[in-house]
Length: 347
Image (cartoon, rainbow, N blue to C red):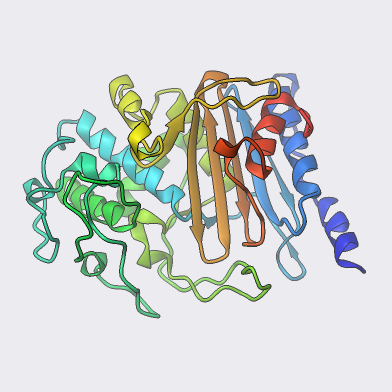
């Protein structure tokens, strides 16, 4: 069988979930997303659309040779985990246990963290702490993640620098103020109210293909922790997206703070990006919240359109999938958003 025929055959593995008339918009959007992904060379993964609180999910291709993808299986969320950590932080702010403009040292003692008395919670959420990126992890259990966050790249508050350490330190703050482990906090404060359970595996995983067609190197999710280690299903992610858009996870004021993008930082908000592009098609100009994730060969794209009550989540286990950038006005990502909103891959 040729490679192209193999992908056509894989497309036939699309999972069609039962849906009543009230779920029609999500189902139609899901079908249009599937149609677009089915002609994307080499795409393999799971995806889903939520509209008006209703969800519909699908699959294409194989998780590994001979085994189709399964939308009910947990997958690597990578840096989408940062969005979950931000939700937990803002919940603690609503509870009065944290303040956005208080320094890290007010809540936890981290002797190896530089500028702990000057870096604020807001700066960590906005990637303006001045911390450098996470240093190399060992090829094994990582131990205390704070030991990889000891280098300064800029003065606190001076510049936007995307990195994992900001969110790793937020995880330490959360554990200190709640006396709970990070994963327990995720599943008690977010998972239990929404009926989902997330995981943070503590063993090496190989689940994706790199650009050259080789298997990714082993990935230790626990080495990324709050910054990239969470695992859940596509429906789990859409469930959280819907709850976030509906204001069920934090106060209205905290939600507005979280989703207000800073033009000076490329419209980075608090652990997400938020801006109002003209998406064309049937959509036009509307608010878009983006959260990407990439670790190893895994890619995740999570898009929320609050004004349309629409969310689109896509997972790929092949790093050759080219998603492009929405702000450029073309590419796979904007095609998928238009398909989900308009019900047609060419809309």
